[in-house]
Length: 115
Length: 116
Image (cartoon, rainbow over all chains, first blue to last red; front, side):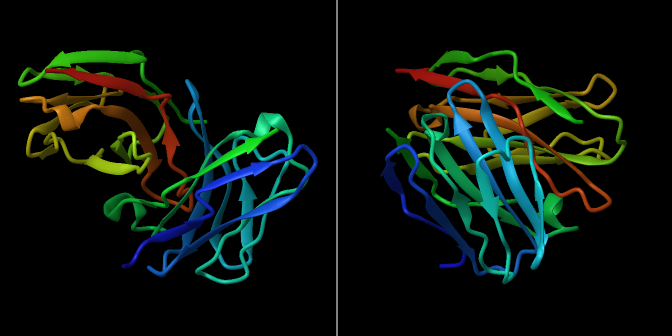
């Protein structure tokens, strides 16, 4: 089925460890983004990309790194995990100029716990 | 920067009754999109309804409708004939229409409880 595939669904890390959250979409969407969801804070934008080779920072980028080598993939890297990065992470994609009309597609989320 | 405010952290409604969730936003743009997303306990983000700012007619999707007041920058969601399956977190979101700003900005959410 077409959509956004996000892996893993759950992860526990130790402080200082690094890891990569994977996100792939098969809808040829130009725009891809990563959000984190914390209780009482809504969804906050971490990083986003408007096309292959183009990335930019969102509202809460510190401690995270992204790259976009293909249209389909947009991995999120945690460089040195901290307990403050315990959260639920969502990947979302959309068409660029048509994103407002056609909406955004979300992955199923990753619940990350840093101990 | 655009901001989206949901002033009701929690709401409750009796089954079969009507409930309205509030959302206000701040923008200097004249053309934009507004969305309501539902997040049930499964964590999946589900698009409920979408409104284009240049359209004066309020959007409707079955039991879900919006009251879009552009001058007041208000975008409330009305759920009619509430069902147990409507219990979820609801997020209001904003996105500009033109240019290359495709970012989706969310409010902090309203947790809706439906009582049988």
